[in-house]
Length: 279
Ligand SMILES: NC(=O)c1ccc[n+]([C@@H]2O[C@H](COP(=O)([O-])OP(=O)(O)OC[C@H]3O[C@@H](n4cnc5c(N)ncnc54)[C@H](O)[C@@H]3O)[C@@H](O)[C@H]2O)c1
Image 1: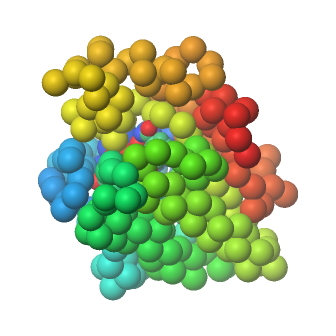
Image 2: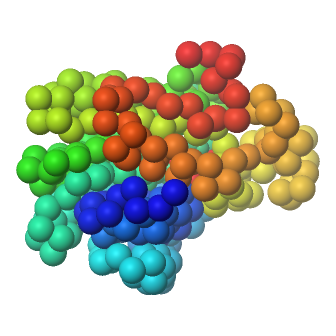
């Protein structure tokens, strides 16, 4: 199926790489104009792996343009409402408004709640929860005139259950669902929907890094991806270690499509069956 988003104006946060990049390219393939936004910074305090780079962000915009859509690359830290308003305002002006908002940017760090540093907790909430609010705050007013307004946010199966060693991530991802369900109620009179996608594990840098391998294989000194794969797989119900980014893009595109026009306030678990064990 193609052309599902013909002429739609889309903003994807966390678009330098990973799921965000794939969503951006898939939207462009469906006929959309896409602005991709990312912090484009190598490092963030408390995060053990590099974030998306400027070069990766530019490359995503090039991939969008190669699909034939208008493209924009925006650099902003979702923790800053001022930066978000400036960057998103620029894209909305260039596109003449926004129709689809994909609230995707995020980080993952590890630690037990009882011994976690306040900085690790605070950075998580600032990025994964307040950052999502800032994204909504900066973008949604530009969607008010849209005929097909859609907000799709990425939570996690950790937003549907407790999860040891990522309690701060779970708190932020549960909070995100509460925020989006509330947004669905507030935007309904304008005909704009707001929904959540909940992946379990996805083949991106967030999953594939040394800190993640160590969490899954604490018995080894320097575990590799190969060492961690069986442990990754043991989390999921279907026998695979992780989903591909396309699996999540399929869910996002569906919620953003005309087919989902009367679906709002929903959580869609694109989660390799982990959802079968909880809500
Ligand atoms: N990979 C997984 O296993 C998995 C599972 C469930 C949910 N998720 C969620 O999916 C979303 C996408 O993650 P991914 O898997 O593509 O990981 P990723 O690390 O490859 O991509 C995340 C992107 O977000 C950007 N980002 C981080 N903090 C930012 C900030 N403050 N401002 C702007 N941009 C920022 C990064 O630079 C990066 O490009 C995240 O919300 C994540 O929590 C991931």
